[in-house]
Length: 108
Image: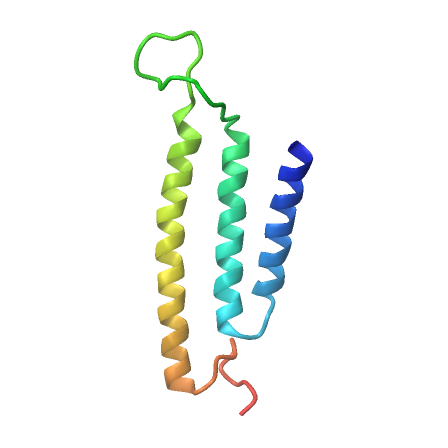
């Protein structure tokens, strides 16, 4: 299972980096989103999440660590805001420059 998880993280990261290196704005936004998903999965993996554990509240010998969950929830909100900002920026550049090339020159 760990090998499958590691391969999934590697594939998400590799696809995200490949899309970031494209010369168009929409693939760059999708690449940033994929890297964000990979980071979220990595945070969950580092948190050693386990099922059936009670929350921190109460008295229990073992309990679930809330830190990875809080980090991922925060990363989801920040990732959503970043994606919305990047899309608006890409749409504005498309409207003003008549090109979706990342440097604004493109092939006209």
